[in-house]
Image (cartoon, rainbow, N blue to C red; front, side):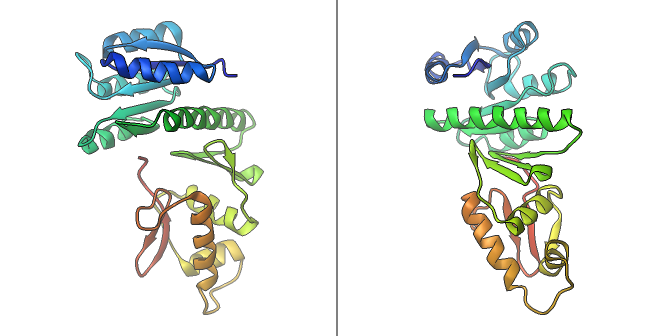
Length: 237
């Protein structure tokens, strides 16, 4: 059972009730707010462990709430999952740029929502532990990579990666947005200069994508740069 406090912010009562019901079933304590100003006040009063935040709110909208909280040092580390409706892609990008950690599109599956919350809280716990030990961890969507421990998690599931698969993932995750040629990956991960065959990289990337459940046509994590190589996605969402 969980003791984490989750603040749910939405002006639609039925959405709040749906989210609250499913989170409380998992043992979370749920706080409610129906407008942006109240949400900020609730954060200051109760300091939740995570916020589920709708974009379209009366008065202060969700984007402004996110921006405000991320500028406050005492609350900026609280994970924020944005709720977005279809057609709000631009607002979603703005939210992520303002510091939101994840987003869920309406209508959403309650099971997916709970899984996202658990994944984000697990990632936060790992990040806090690694920071306390002076180590680094990387979090992107549902993926958490802990280089010093050779561990990676997709949601709550620990990934079963080979050493080379992990080294590929860790290298790209720690250089988000940087394009690596196949030759560069061979040199950095396998430790030798390009010998004329890049199929080794392609095979490992394919296996890694399968374990990440990453569709190469719509990549969430690893993107192919045609004619060049690969990169870890440079946008969250």
